[in-house]
Length: 202
Image (tube, rainbow, N blue to C red; front, top):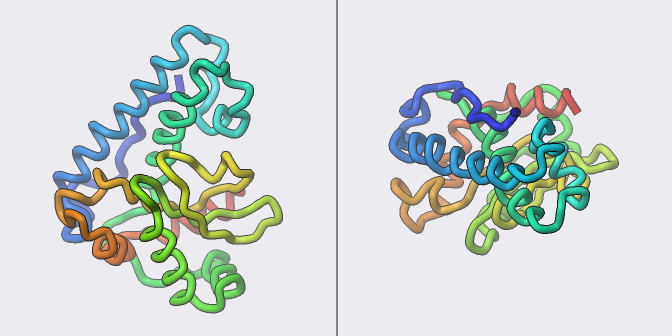
């Protein structure tokens, strides 16, 4: 099955001081693994879906049997979202994007700083648990959205290239209730090369 915990591309402490090692380890080995375990369990009585990917199930969610649809939405979403999230961060990341992503951000939002403000406000606006996303819509345009729980933009006909997890488990050990501080810190670890790759692969 495709439903395995992907290899983390850096050590748990690599993103210090912005994301602490304990949070990284718990988030990766406990939270992400739980989504995978629940995802596999939901599909046990439907073997016809087991060879498929989390992404393909989310794209065609209404083809999933109704009795497991909510579980697949939440847990396949959690697996898909986190698999992207780990890959778009790195040690000594940050700065401003270059390449096609940098150009498209400036064209769409006016400047990188304006985009950053829009994205930050989107991340802050999530009520409870969820994500902020930069996605490419069906017309090829960049859109920033805030989505609840483990919903992915692919449920809404958009392809995510960058996402920020704002569930409390992603930041509470270090930042407690100060989500804006976590959001600001996260820009220091973003891997723009990987975001660029995600965009070019669409």
